[in-house]
Image 1 (cartoon, rainbow, N blue to C red):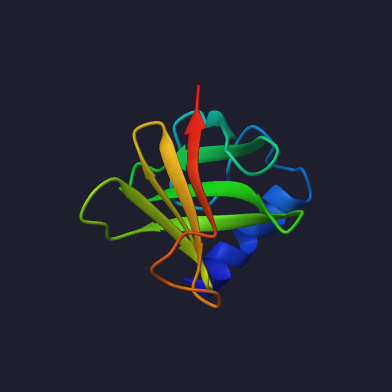
Image 2: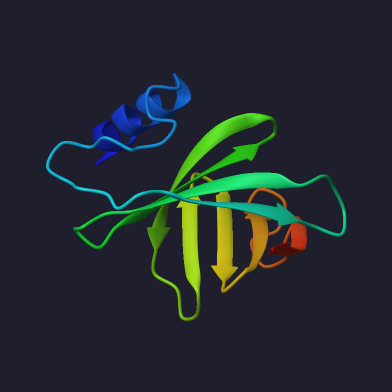
Length: 114
């Protein structure tokens, strides 16, 4: 799995997959691009890919660098994670968490795509 994510990240980070995500043996629907506006900070864009195997990915800027997150279990909404970073969405709303800071309190809260 780690190699799969590394390969996918390499494709995205190099610009080779700006409008598609290529993972062998998984077909993705066209990406969904959303721009989020938060009360504290400038807008940012998240690109979502949904695979035919039930997995989904989110590419978003974290500390000025692209970060590829994978969906994980969530009681409500969709929770994407990579390392200590969690992007939790419900509908058009999203909150960013960093477990190194506080796993239960968002570091960026109240984000909304229009």
